[in-house]
Length: 215
Image (tube, rainbow, N blue to C red; front, top):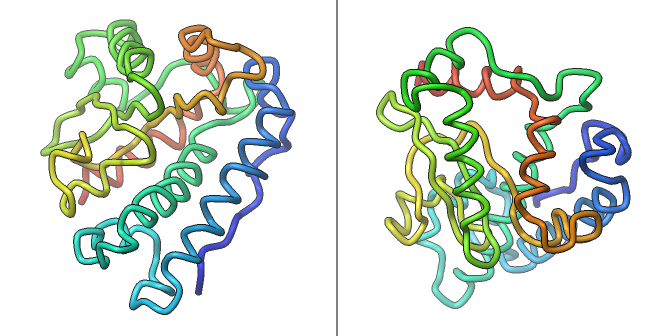
């Protein structure tokens, strides 16, 4: 079936004061909704019209060139945002703190410490010119940090190669488009990234890490 906009997994105000309710309402109800609408419109009548979004992105190189850019931007935006919402939780529930167990050990092994990881990941997001994302990916058994422009993501790598900017299985990502933070943080992207750590759902990230390690 065509893509649909799922509800947020928590109330729009649940991430305050770190991410404000109005930003969440606009981000989800306007921006994400538009990606869903435009992706469905671009894919209508094609073999991918009823395909899972992951398959659409993996097959991006096979999508007709006349609609490929629209599919890349909008199906990419749909997957990225669906993923993003799942990675956050209220600070008084599962959000914030530090990872534990196998994920914590892998982060320490790859980056030396959790503090160093946060610094490098934050720099990837803050340093992304214009709009885009920063990612933590599991690639060939190793954790790597990378970033992509616009609504590109690591799932596109097999289809568009280096243009995607990242490879591997994403287990964490942060949206650094201005619409993700501008109402509250204006041009202070680094402040937004710093506050975002308070709502990261490490339980979910650990699940994704474990699944990626198996596969």
